[in-house]
Amino acid sequence: MAINQKIDRITQVEEREFEAACTALAAGELVVYPTETLYALGADARNPEALARLVALKGREPGKPIALIAADLAMVTELVQSFPTPALRLARRFWPGPLTLVLPARAGLSEVLVNDEGGVGIRVPDHRIARQLSARLGAPLTATSANLAGGVPATTLKAARAALGEGVAVYLEGGELGRQAASTVVAFQHGGLRVLRPGPIDETQLYAALRQ
Image (cartoon, rainbow, N blue to C red; front, side, top):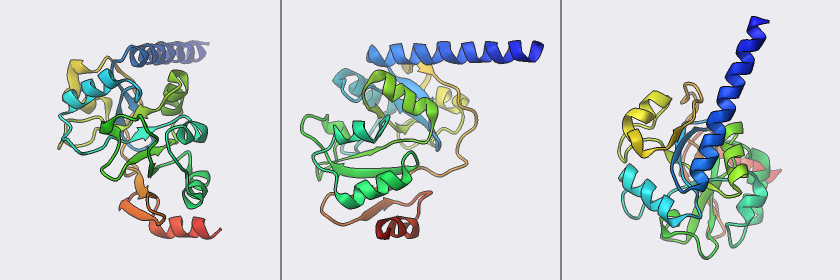
């Protein structure tokens, strides 16, 4: 009985923290949350003030676009002008998972999310908390690593808190992360596939999926 009571209390604490994070995001504040790779610094991607707050806190260098996470494939399609067939094949094969696709951005996205070629990087993460935050908000979240620009990506909540401090409204615990490298980043902006950042999904796996 004591063990069950302890589990119930932990669940209730997690739920309260999750609700606090959802409320903060909706109010334009910042949240640190776990993904299957690293801790991420989240803001509502639709909110210009929240994005400006994130850029200022992180010290993000101009011209370096901020990647996003989404709750599901349907949310991703709302953010892009087109979804090339090869990219869609990879999404269906590897999402949820550590694969970021850079696709032609739909008009109206903030310039801090879009690269010089008009692309936005986005993925559906293989982590329940990350997906549920996006689903509850009804919008994509920023997925930049939870550290200051040029710093070491946070693999623990303690490291994220030490780097970002009171600039973050809510920190969501996810245990020690970093057992898996940051997501593979693949661009599909001009017809072909370009691996912009190697990661857990290698080129052999990517091309094998495209041949299926």
